[in-house]
Image (cartoon, rainbow, N blue to C red; front, side, top):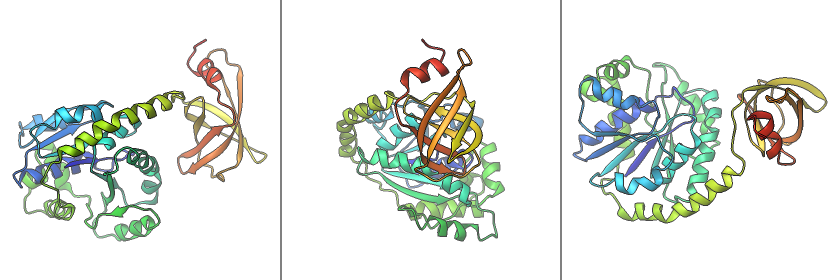
Length: 325
């Protein structure tokens, strides 16, 4: 079985959960491979603290995991993948290999809204990996609060299961990581250890590893490559430049977080209706001349708005943002 802990938002406890889930599976006498897909390689650092070799760890922060997994998986019964935040290419590759994607979210509406990109990526991956299952996991809940109940109500409108077990903020999780141990090793009788055990018992990991699953992934790689080519027709650039924009006759100011020939994401605290027309103006980084583009708001959330341009702007964006031309 291949399990991934994934969320584009950082700070939700992915790495802590991945380490503890991997250790729990070893107690069931399954041979585990832990793939640290985060470029920072924190799990290798954790493992080195006390030479904790209860499971094998490799650092593989690449968007070729879907192609490499057949070779990497040899000799293992279960694979746990710790996905990086905010890396669409690596995370999509991870989801193409995954049977169970666990999405830890903090018990707040902001965390739910921030998970939209992850949910969209899961939908994309399912076009090529029909066996992919996603589940929310409420994480970092403050002990003694009703936050878990409240966030469950918020999740009712999303077509994805929510794991019953909830993970609380507990010092034993932090202390165990500092010692290079899982919480099950560091404090086996603690509430944190009980939470991990209950979580893993609820998930009921499939002990059998299906070679046909990896074969199916290999068959779908060509489809994935086609999608990558299509995606690279409008590659994203991250310029972080100021932008003036107008919606329904009113003027606003924000920052362009990323932009491509087909659209942009503007960081703003203002709320707008999806479908509204927008005109955005910003200065070229090459010659400081104003660039004016018209589009439509296709996504609106607490972090900002997604804009689709009426006409692709490949040459304009390349020259204005990347100094090409």
